[in-house]
Length: 353
Image 1 (cartoon, rainbow, N blue to C red):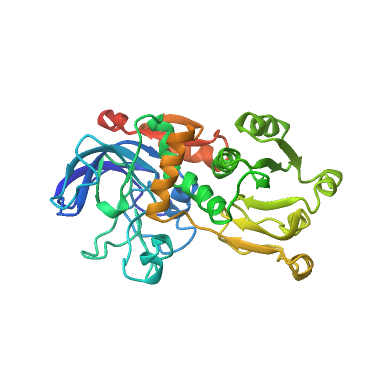
Image 2: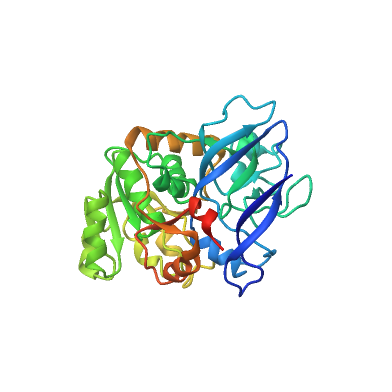
């Protein structure tokens, strides 16, 4: 066992506070990582506040982890001490079901073991996340990160990155295609970067903000569509090969269906609650259009994504914070006051009270 320091919430109304806890000893298949940077995901706040139910406390959030390997078990050969490594949203799965055997551990039929707010499969102990000084993870759920990347800006790739990369790959986005990214936040800005790097023509869909339109083009978008403008929506009707919907709250998706070509798909990655209002069946039937969903990615695909990022020099746009300011960052995140992802410099934990 090793003593870890981090920041935790103790109930669904508590702020994040300094917290000490134990990590398991490094086993034969484990990797210990000293955490350098931990990204802040909106789901950290949702889980801490028990918005989705089933929360367990105390809870150390964080599933966008970048760090340096300091110890490996006897069976580990893929990574060594000194390497830069990443840990994302999950740290285990059953490894035996059809999904796991097809490198889709995120869809494990028994449910993956999440990086925090879950129970270890063997010990039953609570998993604790990346708002901490180190982590011990089974090697299958650790990815190698190129040191050519800006490491602080690479942390959000472990969630926001793979969440948008995976559906773009699954639906074979590439040259000659017109792709729409709905929403421009932590997920959306990564969707723009990936779709553009894959060779697609990228249109970002926003509701009103001209400032976000300018930023979309800075990120690589070819055009911006204001979805509340009927004339603009009509001009783009039946023209999109794929829509990536990154909006994290319930909204009316029916208008977007008119933008899709026949036999094309809108993929939801941002919202897990009910669609309200519901989709109208005719918007799917007339044009044989589809609405789908996608969740993060398997470990092999996550490694592929990181290698793609190294090749194309893709990272997130981030604001780095001191861990003492994490509660303020959560408040700002709720107000969408971040471009586009907060990342905690975990070196600041050493001086935290």
